[in-house]
Length: 176
Image 1 (cartoon, rainbow, N blue to C red):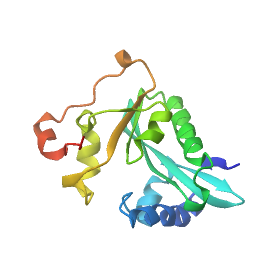
Image 2: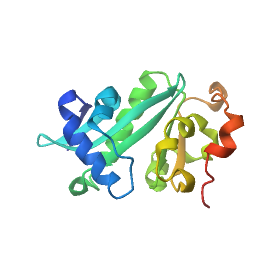
Image 3: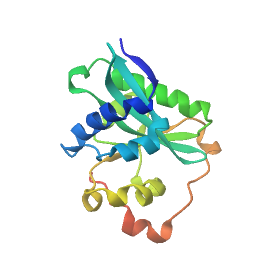
Image 4: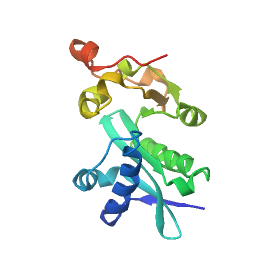
């Protein structure tokens, strides 16, 4: 069984290699070691026999919401429940920070659905589009699915700051 722990600075190189392996296939955004160093506190890693076999990050967007991102499992370690363990650990951390909701952009919506996430229109998450999507090579033809999990009753979740004046130009329409 894999051990889940917070990432450390010494994990940067193997994390970057794992994430960029998926980025080469157009599945994730590439990350530099500099970016990883800036965001290392967001990451958790899964280790087996001393090797990193998975990672994921909880990145805060508002005082009430965060994104599960950079979720990756080494190809040789897939189907062992490592992705689930990482998302559950990141959700626990989100609850410790009293977040009302977490979201993810993914190609594997079925995986997130099994963990209690629901598909939402990406327009409901405008801060994500403004901050990260602009640098994505797939920005004009995004095919990722936006998934959201409420951690508190919806009535307790205040809406994200609206960027209505830019939303129509920044948020690509998801295919159906």
